[in-house]
Image (cartoon, rainbow, N blue to C red; front, side, top):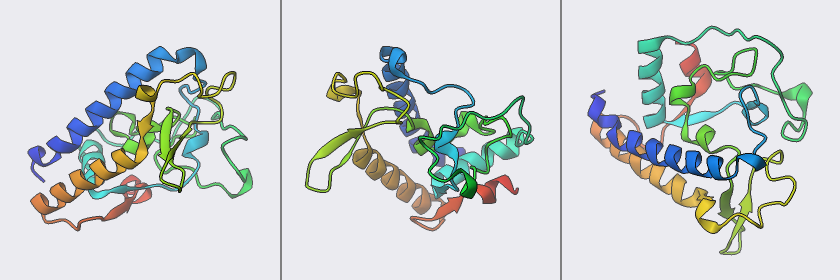
Length: 183
């Protein structure tokens, strides 16, 4: 992999992060998300090939932080449907901290934000973590503060396709984060 092959992905991540920072700053009084809040991370995740390459390169350079934590993870019963049948993300430590936070996947960067998702009838509906925006809901949030997941998924798929063509990897490949954690 040539570092330039990740340039499109890095630009996408920067745009997602800019949006997240702006929205989080504007609505900090409505966000419950905090360090160690890992209710949304209680599942096995896979990532696009371009994301796997970015994460893998970071792990090779920095190593993967050991699975250690300084306390019990905060896991919300609202976001974990069946706590007895949970597979935490392979990148979480025992305290609910992400061991790859600087290079976490796009999906992880968007958790908790107000998002627009297809309603199945050609329209969109707003959604967010059930711990956020609990007092007034999303009705007061302007449309510019919503992240359109259909658009984001389409752009990520295009970035991944371009990456796979440049590197000879398999287009559309999904890589379990657990495979990257086992390196």
